[in-house]
Image 1 (cartoon, rainbow, N blue to C red):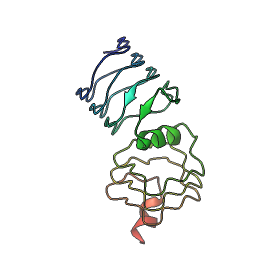
Image 2 (cartoon, rainbow, N blue to C red; image 1 turned 30 degrees about the vertical axis):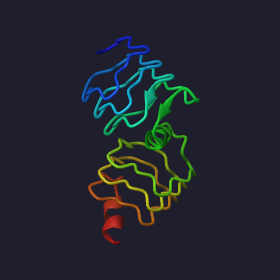
Image 3 (cartoon, one colour; image 1 turned 90 degrees about the vertical axis):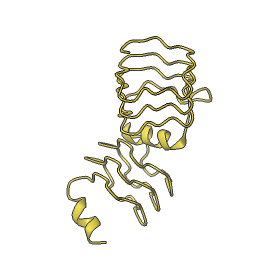
Image 4 (cartoon, rainbow, N blue to C red; image 1 turned 180 degrees about the horizontal axis):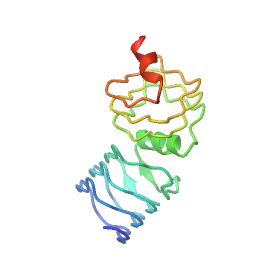
Amino acid sequence: MQRADLTGAYLNGANLRGANLTAATFAGADLQGADLRDVTLTGSNWRGANLLGADLGGVDLRNLQVELDETTRFDYKWYAVWAGVNHLAQGWNLRGVDLSGAHLAGADFSRADLLGANLSAASLKQANLKEADLTGAELIDAVLPDGWQAVVAAY
């Protein structure tokens, strides 16, 4: 599905798991509840798309061409992931946010409040968690930044 033009398409509940959607256009498309786990979205356009309830687990949201305005809708979880991997979430309040299963490799959550956040099965390899508050965060099966395994094991 590389370079596919799905502008305005109705894909509510569609199973696109693992698809290569490089440079595809989903502007104004309805993907509510769609399974988008492990898809490749490099250079794709999601302006005005409805992704509420969609599962983006394992998706690399870096450099995704999304205009985050009132027309683009997706769950706060994925907005937080997008902001983190694009280095826009420093110091954010992400208390209790469910980031489970998210691809957060290289994300910047420095000084973020992740108190009680669910990071289980999330990939945090090379993530910046400097001065982040991870008190009570769920880290089961999370892939942690180098050196963090020993810190977590101490708790």
